[in-house]
Image (cartoon, rainbow, N blue to C red; front, side, top):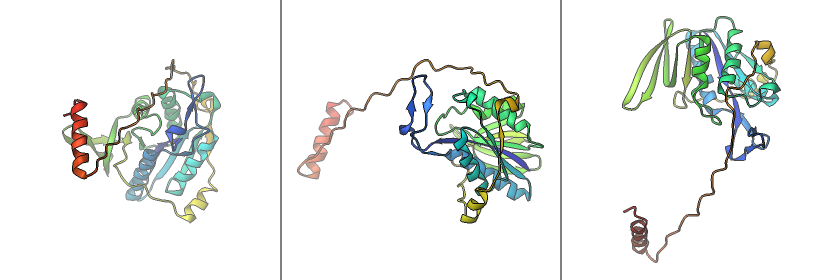
Length: 256
């Protein structure tokens, strides 16, 4: 089974990210890490290849030069290869532009049976990209997957719905978006981390992919959420006194 995994480098702390004057994000003040749900997607891919007794896992990421660290991490925990989409001209591209680039990168790979991604990224959280990639590749897809098992020519996927769970059979090739409940990502060993440092990755630009990095959405305004009002600390001489004051405060606020 040959699997392409879409991974992303994100800020570890969104509070450290600044918005620039042109409404793009300045991530230089935030520590970059591999998207947590992307790590779940990679683990799912590695497990499927191991269970199949063979195959390849190729990690694909779109990002600046520093995103190479994410590909190294992927190799250290089981990926066989990595592709880095590196192009300053696509910085700040919207979800559809991102999906076009990722889909084009997947097309370059031979015999891809499955594309796996996190359903939503830690920083964007739009949940749109995996479905867009599937549409661009003309492949069936399913998102918000919490468990998956391989069978002949298909995947059996479980996901949570409003009133329970549903089990869906996805014919391959296809696209799957997983969430953080699908597995527990493994940790790299010292040996695998050292080996990953020597890995060489294919680097591609938008021109290499034949994709025009056009933008279909424009941010018109960015506002900072208002500061939260400080809370009120309720104390009393005894536990009963504190409870009485708390009940009185809730009644006064119209909560009780």
